[in-house]
Amino acid sequence: MFFLASLFSLKGHHPLPVFPPIPSYMYTLPRVSVPHRNLVIKVEKDLEMEKHGRKPEPNIFASVWRFLRRCLFLVLALGPMPNHIAFIMDGNRRYAKRRNVKEGTGHGVGFTTLTSICQYCYEMGVKYVTVYAFSIDNFKRKPEEVQSLMDLMKEKIDELLEEDSIVQKYGFRINFWGSLDLLSEPVRLAAEKVMTHTADNTGPVLSICVAYTSTNEIMRAIKKSCARKSFRTQGYVNCDGESVCEDNNGYVTVADLEENLDTADCPDPDIVIRTSGEARLSNFLLWQTSLSHLQNPNPLWPEFSLRNLVWAILEYQKIYPYLEARRRLAKKEN
Image (cartoon, rainbow, N blue to C red; front, side, top):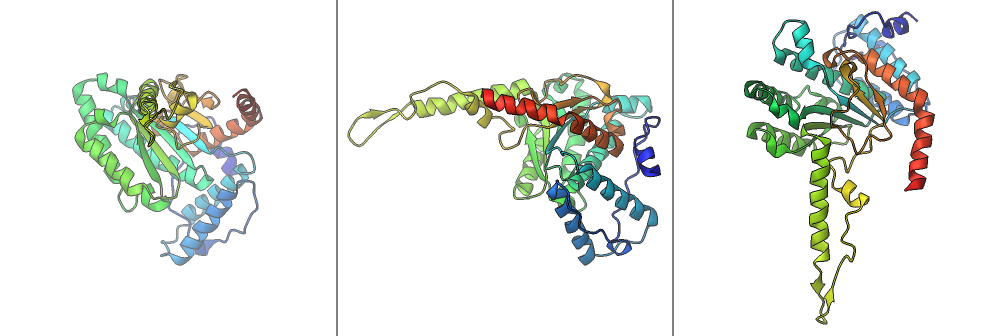
Protein backbone atom coordinates (compact mmCIF):
# COMPACT_ATOMS: atom_id res chain seq x y z
CA MET A 1 0.00 0.00 0.00
CA PHE A 2 2.86 2.35 0.78
CA PHE A 3 4.28 1.66 -2.69
CA LEU A 4 1.01 2.47 -4.44
CA ALA A 5 0.43 5.55 -2.31
CA SER A 6 3.85 6.94 -3.14
CA LEU A 7 3.48 6.01 -6.79
CA PHE A 8 0.30 8.00 -7.32
CA SER A 9 1.02 10.88 -4.96
CA LEU A 10 0.13 14.12 -6.69
CA LYS A 11 2.32 16.25 -4.43
CA GLY A 12 5.71 15.34 -5.87
CA HIS A 13 6.81 15.48 -9.47
CA HIS A 14 10.18 13.75 -9.21
CA PRO A 15 10.53 10.63 -11.37
CA LEU A 16 10.84 7.34 -9.57
CA PRO A 17 14.33 5.77 -9.55
CA VAL A 18 15.19 3.18 -12.18
CA PHE A 19 16.98 0.24 -10.61
CA PRO A 20 18.95 -2.63 -12.16
CA PRO A 21 17.13 -5.89 -13.01
CA ILE A 22 16.08 -8.11 -10.13
CA PRO A 23 18.21 -11.24 -9.74
CA SER A 24 16.21 -14.40 -10.42
CA TYR A 25 17.72 -16.20 -7.45
CA MET A 26 16.17 -13.72 -5.00
CA TYR A 27 12.57 -14.50 -5.82
CA THR A 28 10.31 -16.69 -7.90
CA LEU A 29 7.20 -15.41 -9.64
CA PRO A 30 4.47 -18.01 -10.25
CA ARG A 31 2.63 -18.22 -13.55
CA VAL A 32 -0.36 -15.88 -13.49
CA SER A 33 -3.18 -16.05 -16.00
CA VAL A 34 -4.27 -12.54 -17.02
CA PRO A 35 -6.03 -11.19 -20.10
CA HIS A 36 -2.87 -9.59 -21.51
CA ARG A 37 -1.11 -12.80 -22.58
CA ASN A 38 1.98 -11.02 -23.94
CA LEU A 39 2.78 -9.70 -20.48
CA VAL A 40 2.70 -13.18 -18.93
CA ILE A 41 4.96 -14.49 -21.68
CA LYS A 42 7.29 -11.54 -21.15
CA VAL A 43 7.59 -12.16 -17.39
CA GLU A 44 8.28 -15.86 -17.89
CA LYS A 45 10.79 -15.10 -20.65
CA ASP A 46 12.64 -12.61 -18.44
CA LEU A 47 12.86 -15.10 -15.63
CA GLU A 48 14.18 -17.76 -17.99
CA MET A 49 16.82 -15.36 -19.39
CA GLU A 50 17.94 -14.38 -15.90
CA LYS A 51 18.07 -18.02 -14.90
CA HIS A 52 20.61 -18.87 -17.64
CA GLY A 53 22.44 -15.56 -17.68
CA ARG A 54 25.13 -14.07 -15.48
CA LYS A 55 23.83 -13.14 -12.05
CA PRO A 56 24.19 -9.46 -11.16
CA GLU A 57 25.43 -8.36 -7.79
CA PRO A 58 22.68 -8.68 -5.16
CA ASN A 59 20.89 -5.42 -4.41
CA ILE A 60 17.89 -5.71 -2.12
CA PHE A 61 16.44 -2.33 -3.06
CA ALA A 62 16.74 -3.04 -6.78
CA SER A 63 15.19 -6.46 -6.24
CA VAL A 64 12.21 -5.10 -4.32
CA TRP A 65 11.59 -2.33 -6.85
CA ARG A 66 11.74 -4.67 -9.85
CA PHE A 67 9.45 -7.17 -8.12
CA LEU A 68 6.89 -4.49 -7.20
CA ARG A 69 6.99 -3.09 -10.71
CA ARG A 70 6.25 -6.47 -12.22
CA CYS A 71 3.42 -7.05 -9.79
CA LEU A 72 2.00 -3.63 -10.65
CA PHE A 73 2.10 -4.40 -14.37
CA LEU A 74 0.36 -7.75 -13.85
CA VAL A 75 -2.43 -6.02 -11.94
CA LEU A 76 -2.64 -3.27 -14.58
CA ALA A 77 -2.96 -5.91 -17.32
CA LEU A 78 -6.22 -7.15 -15.78
CA GLY A 79 -7.83 -4.25 -17.64
CA PRO A 80 -7.63 -3.39 -21.37
CA MET A 81 -4.07 -2.49 -22.32
CA PRO A 82 -3.06 -0.18 -25.16
CA ASN A 83 -1.29 -1.69 -28.12
CA HIS A 84 0.19 1.60 -29.31
CA ILE A 85 1.15 4.71 -27.31
CA ALA A 86 2.35 7.90 -29.03
CA PHE A 87 4.22 10.69 -27.24
CA ILE A 88 4.74 14.34 -28.09
CA MET A 89 7.95 14.93 -26.15
CA ASP A 90 7.34 18.54 -25.15
CA GLY A 91 9.24 20.57 -22.56
CA ASN A 92 12.94 19.75 -23.06
CA ARG A 93 13.99 23.39 -23.49
CA ARG A 94 11.82 24.58 -20.60
CA TYR A 95 13.34 21.87 -18.41
CA ALA A 96 16.83 23.21 -19.14
CA LYS A 97 15.75 26.83 -18.68
CA ARG A 98 14.18 26.18 -15.28
CA ARG A 99 17.42 24.60 -14.09
CA ASN A 100 19.71 27.20 -15.65
CA VAL A 101 21.62 24.67 -17.72
CA LYS A 102 22.41 24.42 -21.44
CA GLU A 103 19.47 23.76 -23.74
CA GLY A 104 21.02 20.56 -25.02
CA THR A 105 21.01 19.20 -21.47
CA GLY A 106 17.22 19.07 -21.50
CA HIS A 107 17.21 17.03 -24.70
CA GLY A 108 19.84 14.69 -23.27
CA VAL A 109 17.75 14.04 -20.16
CA GLY A 110 14.75 13.63 -22.46
CA PHE A 111 16.54 10.80 -24.28
CA THR A 112 17.11 9.06 -20.94
CA THR A 113 13.40 9.43 -20.21
CA LEU A 114 12.61 7.89 -23.60
CA THR A 115 14.72 4.80 -22.91
CA SER A 116 13.04 4.34 -19.51
CA ILE A 117 9.55 4.71 -20.99
CA CYS A 118 10.40 2.22 -23.74
CA GLN A 119 11.57 -0.24 -21.08
CA TYR A 120 8.31 0.15 -19.12
CA CYS A 121 6.23 -0.24 -22.28
CA TYR A 122 8.15 -3.41 -23.12
CA GLU A 123 7.56 -4.83 -19.66
CA MET A 124 3.84 -4.02 -19.91
CA GLY A 125 3.50 -5.66 -23.31
CA VAL A 126 2.88 -2.47 -25.31
CA LYS A 127 3.90 -3.41 -28.85
CA TYR A 128 4.20 0.03 -30.52
CA VAL A 129 5.71 3.27 -29.23
CA THR A 130 5.84 6.40 -31.39
CA VAL A 131 7.55 9.67 -30.45
CA TYR A 132 7.51 13.13 -32.02
CA ALA A 133 11.18 14.12 -31.86
CA PHE A 134 11.71 16.89 -34.41
CA SER A 135 9.18 18.82 -36.48
CA ILE A 136 9.85 20.34 -39.89
CA ASP A 137 8.89 23.64 -38.26
CA ASN A 138 11.87 23.25 -35.89
CA PHE A 139 14.18 24.03 -38.81
CA LYS A 140 12.98 27.65 -38.44
CA ARG A 141 14.92 27.96 -35.16
CA LYS A 142 18.35 29.60 -35.00
CA PRO A 143 20.89 27.79 -37.24
CA GLU A 144 23.24 27.10 -34.32
CA GLU A 145 20.40 25.58 -32.30
CA VAL A 146 19.35 23.38 -35.22
CA GLN A 147 22.94 22.24 -35.75
CA SER A 148 23.28 21.45 -32.04
CA LEU A 149 20.11 19.35 -32.18
CA MET A 150 21.38 17.53 -35.30
CA ASP A 151 24.65 16.71 -33.53
CA LEU A 152 22.80 15.48 -30.45
CA MET A 153 20.42 13.45 -32.63
CA LYS A 154 23.34 11.79 -34.41
CA GLU A 155 24.93 10.92 -31.06
CA LYS A 156 21.73 9.42 -29.64
CA ILE A 157 20.93 7.48 -32.81
CA ASP A 158 24.40 5.93 -32.70
CA GLU A 159 23.79 4.96 -29.07
CA LEU A 160 20.81 2.86 -30.16
CA LEU A 161 23.24 0.33 -31.64
CA GLU A 162 25.40 0.04 -28.53
CA GLU A 163 25.44 -3.24 -26.64
CA ASP A 164 23.51 -1.99 -23.60
CA SER A 165 20.86 -0.05 -25.57
CA ILE A 166 17.13 -0.87 -25.60
CA VAL A 167 17.58 -2.26 -29.12
CA GLN A 168 19.98 -4.94 -27.91
CA LYS A 169 18.24 -5.61 -24.59
CA TYR A 170 14.65 -5.87 -25.81
CA GLY A 171 14.92 -6.42 -29.57
CA PHE A 172 13.29 -3.14 -30.58
CA ARG A 173 12.70 -2.48 -34.28
CA ILE A 174 13.36 1.18 -35.06
CA ASN A 175 11.51 3.27 -37.66
CA PHE A 176 12.26 6.87 -38.64
CA TRP A 177 9.26 8.68 -40.13
CA GLY A 178 9.34 11.99 -41.96
CA SER A 179 11.18 13.71 -44.79
CA LEU A 180 14.59 12.27 -43.95
CA ASP A 181 16.14 14.08 -46.91
CA LEU A 182 15.78 17.32 -44.91
CA LEU A 183 18.14 16.01 -42.22
CA SER A 184 21.88 16.58 -42.32
CA GLU A 185 23.65 13.74 -44.13
CA PRO A 186 25.32 12.24 -41.01
CA VAL A 187 21.97 12.09 -39.20
CA ARG A 188 20.17 10.63 -42.21
CA LEU A 189 22.83 7.95 -42.73
CA ALA A 190 22.78 7.08 -39.03
CA ALA A 191 18.98 6.74 -39.10
CA GLU A 192 19.09 4.53 -42.18
CA LYS A 193 21.78 2.37 -40.57
CA VAL A 194 19.67 1.81 -37.45
CA MET A 195 16.58 0.94 -39.51
CA THR A 196 18.56 -1.56 -41.58
CA HIS A 197 20.22 -3.07 -38.51
CA THR A 198 16.92 -3.58 -36.65
CA ALA A 199 14.68 -4.49 -39.60
CA ASP A 200 14.53 -8.17 -38.63
CA ASN A 201 14.00 -7.61 -34.90
CA THR A 202 10.79 -9.12 -33.56
CA GLY A 203 10.42 -7.08 -30.38
CA PRO A 204 8.44 -3.86 -29.85
CA VAL A 205 8.45 -1.18 -32.55
CA LEU A 206 9.80 2.28 -31.76
CA SER A 207 8.91 4.85 -34.43
CA ILE A 208 10.70 8.20 -34.24
CA CYS A 209 9.20 11.13 -36.15
CA VAL A 210 11.97 13.47 -37.35
CA ALA A 211 11.70 16.22 -39.97
CA TYR A 212 8.02 15.37 -39.72
CA THR A 213 4.61 17.02 -39.81
CA SER A 214 1.35 15.24 -40.43
CA THR A 215 0.41 17.51 -43.35
CA ASN A 216 3.74 16.72 -44.99
CA GLU A 217 3.17 13.00 -44.44
CA ILE A 218 -0.29 13.20 -46.04
CA MET A 219 1.07 15.24 -48.96
CA ARG A 220 3.81 12.66 -49.59
CA ALA A 221 1.24 9.85 -49.38
CA ILE A 222 -0.98 11.60 -51.95
CA LYS A 223 1.95 12.03 -54.34
CA LYS A 224 2.87 8.34 -54.01
CA SER A 225 -0.75 7.30 -54.52
CA CYS A 226 -1.12 9.47 -57.62
CA ALA A 227 2.15 8.16 -59.05
CA ARG A 228 1.03 4.56 -58.58
CA LYS A 229 -2.44 5.27 -59.99
CA SER A 230 -0.91 7.00 -62.99
CA PHE A 231 1.36 4.01 -63.62
CA ARG A 232 -1.52 1.53 -63.37
CA THR A 233 -3.92 3.55 -65.57
CA GLN A 234 -1.44 4.00 -68.42
CA GLY A 235 -2.38 0.52 -69.59
CA TYR A 236 -0.57 -1.81 -71.96
CA VAL A 237 -1.09 -3.71 -75.22
CA ASN A 238 -1.86 -7.42 -74.95
CA CYS A 239 -0.73 -10.16 -77.30
CA ASP A 240 -3.75 -9.56 -79.59
CA GLY A 241 -2.77 -5.95 -80.09
CA GLU A 242 -5.64 -4.67 -77.94
CA SER A 243 -5.14 -1.76 -75.53
CA VAL A 244 -5.82 -2.89 -71.96
CA CYS A 245 -6.19 -0.55 -68.98
CA GLU A 246 -5.17 -2.16 -65.72
CA ASP A 247 -7.23 0.21 -63.57
CA ASN A 248 -10.23 2.08 -64.93
CA ASN A 249 -10.60 4.13 -61.75
CA GLY A 250 -7.99 6.85 -61.59
CA TYR A 251 -9.21 8.33 -58.34
CA VAL A 252 -7.13 8.08 -55.17
CA THR A 253 -9.12 6.32 -52.45
CA VAL A 254 -8.73 6.42 -48.68
CA ALA A 255 -7.25 2.93 -48.83
CA ASP A 256 -4.68 4.11 -51.40
CA LEU A 257 -3.70 7.01 -49.17
CA GLU A 258 -3.36 4.90 -46.02
CA GLU A 259 -1.18 2.38 -47.83
CA ASN A 260 1.33 5.16 -48.55
CA LEU A 261 1.43 6.86 -45.14
CA ASP A 262 4.54 6.46 -42.98
CA THR A 263 2.34 4.56 -40.52
CA ALA A 264 1.07 2.01 -43.07
CA ASP A 265 2.46 -0.98 -41.13
CA CYS A 266 1.47 0.33 -37.71
CA PRO A 267 -1.94 0.42 -35.97
CA ASP A 268 -3.41 3.78 -34.98
CA PRO A 269 -2.39 4.98 -31.51
CA ASP A 270 -4.64 4.04 -28.61
CA ILE A 271 -3.22 6.87 -26.48
CA VAL A 272 -1.54 10.14 -27.48
CA ILE A 273 0.31 11.82 -24.62
CA ARG A 274 1.63 15.37 -24.87
CA THR A 275 3.71 16.34 -21.87
CA SER A 276 4.03 19.82 -20.29
CA GLY A 277 0.26 20.30 -20.08
CA GLU A 278 -0.12 21.57 -23.65
CA ALA A 279 -3.41 20.55 -25.30
CA ARG A 280 -2.27 20.67 -28.94
CA LEU A 281 -1.32 17.96 -31.44
CA SER A 282 1.08 20.33 -33.25
CA ASN A 283 0.61 18.61 -36.62
CA PHE A 284 1.34 15.12 -35.26
CA LEU A 285 -0.46 12.03 -36.63
CA LEU A 286 -3.59 14.01 -37.53
CA TRP A 287 -4.88 11.28 -39.84
CA GLN A 288 -4.31 8.46 -37.33
CA THR A 289 -5.62 9.92 -34.06
CA SER A 290 -9.33 10.52 -34.66
CA LEU A 291 -10.20 7.71 -32.23
CA SER A 292 -7.21 8.00 -29.89
CA HIS A 293 -7.40 9.02 -26.24
CA LEU A 294 -5.62 12.38 -25.98
CA GLN A 295 -3.90 13.25 -22.69
CA ASN A 296 -1.83 16.25 -21.60
CA PRO A 297 -0.14 15.61 -18.23
CA ASN A 298 1.67 18.54 -16.61
CA PRO A 299 5.23 17.17 -16.20
CA LEU A 300 7.75 18.25 -18.81
CA TRP A 301 9.06 15.38 -20.93
CA PRO A 302 12.34 14.92 -18.97
CA GLU A 303 10.20 14.70 -15.79
CA PHE A 304 7.75 12.14 -17.19
CA SER A 305 7.93 9.02 -15.03
CA LEU A 306 6.48 5.57 -14.50
CA ARG A 307 3.81 7.08 -12.25
CA ASN A 308 2.61 9.32 -15.10
CA LEU A 309 2.64 6.44 -17.56
CA VAL A 310 0.61 4.16 -15.28
CA TRP A 311 -1.86 6.96 -14.60
CA ALA A 312 -2.26 7.51 -18.36
CA ILE A 313 -3.10 3.83 -18.87
CA LEU A 314 -5.62 3.90 -16.02
CA GLU A 315 -7.29 6.92 -17.63
CA TYR A 316 -7.38 5.00 -20.93
CA GLN A 317 -8.97 1.99 -19.24
CA LYS A 318 -11.70 4.21 -17.79
CA ILE A 319 -12.72 5.52 -21.22
CA TYR A 320 -12.01 2.30 -23.15
CA PRO A 321 -15.70 1.22 -23.49
CA TYR A 322 -16.59 4.57 -25.10
CA LEU A 323 -13.61 4.39 -27.48
CA GLU A 324 -14.48 0.83 -28.51
CA ALA A 325 -18.08 1.84 -29.19
CA ARG A 326 -16.89 4.72 -31.38
CA ARG A 327 -14.49 2.40 -33.26
CA ARG A 328 -17.25 -0.12 -33.95
CA LEU A 329 -19.50 2.66 -35.21
CA ALA A 330 -16.75 3.98 -37.46
CA LYS A 331 -16.24 0.51 -38.97
CA LYS A 332 -19.95 0.22 -39.73
CA GLU A 333 -19.99 3.63 -41.42
CA ASN A 334 -17.04 2.68 -43.58
